[in-house]
Length: 257
Ligand code: 1HE
Image 1: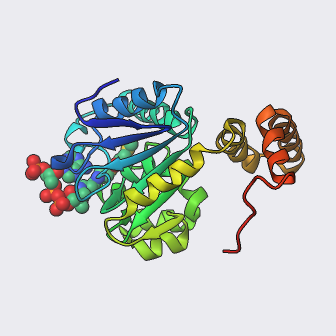
Image 2: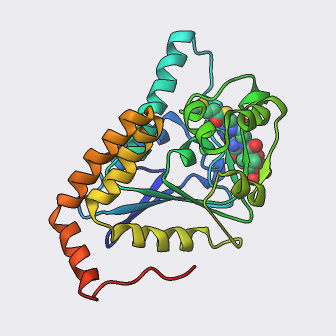
């Protein structure tokens, strides 16, 4: 599972996956995107949540442009599908993934971040889709995932005009769920991953695999899928013992925010 440009550390139930190609701003070569796929496909069974981070000042500069050679249409199609398969392993892999964003989160880097379940950004973060100015299009699932975060109109604007969102505006429009001071994205992401890791596995499964599909279904199908998932989750022994703990005064109450 080792890869020269990925640092993987297992800290109890949390896997820390760090893109480690800072000299190239963690640009995603084919080899690196396949490495990401391999890591998420092969996480140890003991892992319950993951943090995805980038070494150096930037989370990820996107596609490694030095590899964008003369691809014909067929090769371009397969290249994009290769990214899709890799990022599916992040979104629909074994555990929820919390991205720790800082610096550039651009192009394919933003596509990768969008495949994660929670995004924590620090104040140095900026978001862009320079594909527009490079004469290309997104190919790593961005056309599907990014409009679901910020809307198709905002994404089109980013690509048509080269608009860059700073950290504050990125949080406001929905790129990140959390905004923290500069340098604190990893610590916050790790803290959140530790919380996520404590959830019942079937609850995390439902949130990763059922919720995004339900959200795309027509209401009548969504209600049925929700009911099926709810029935499965609540029938697990872990759900019963957690509810019993609450009813018998052993579990935390919800605290006022
Ligand atoms: C790269 C890449 C890259 C940096 N591919 N080599 N993505 C982009 O269009 C973004 C391109 N990158 C940038 O705009 C900037 O590099 C950053 C804003 C991310 C960072 O700036 P900075 O000043 O910290 O670094 P730098 O000096 O620009 O780059 C340092 C080195 O990294 C330099 O190489 P060097 O050998 O001269 O030291 C850069 O060439 C290299 N580098 N970014 C290759 N992306 C599935 S389809 C997805 C389609 C896309 O993602 S398109 C968008 C690609």
